[in-house]
Image (tube, rainbow, N blue to C red; front, side):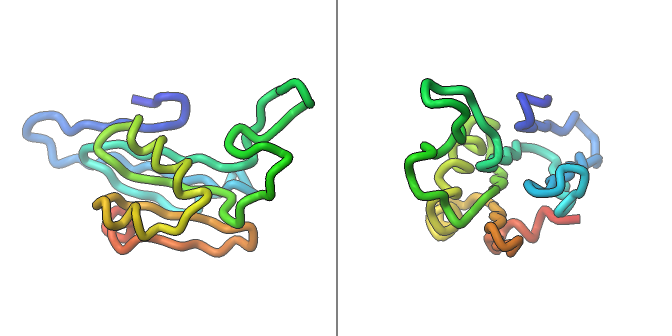
Length: 127
């Protein structure tokens, strides 16, 4: 199920099929950074490039334009539900991945220089 870009998958009984899901680049939207494979669970991706209209014009949807931009520009999180995955992506934009990893979740972040950081569990899902 695609929930506005957040993906929730479930495996049917007796199936051995995993779902391949491409994680797209925040700076080159036609380019996949990686492909993950999920049998059950959810993945969400957030980036600071998304914008919304506010009283002062168009702003980022995660951080106010008046605040300093975070070094991380995009993050993806794998969790049991799409809502948890989405919530943790917002946390990962502004914090390191240690708490996400200690919560047993898999995550990947991309900084403004294009550097990719991953939790140790993220690698388990990469195809």
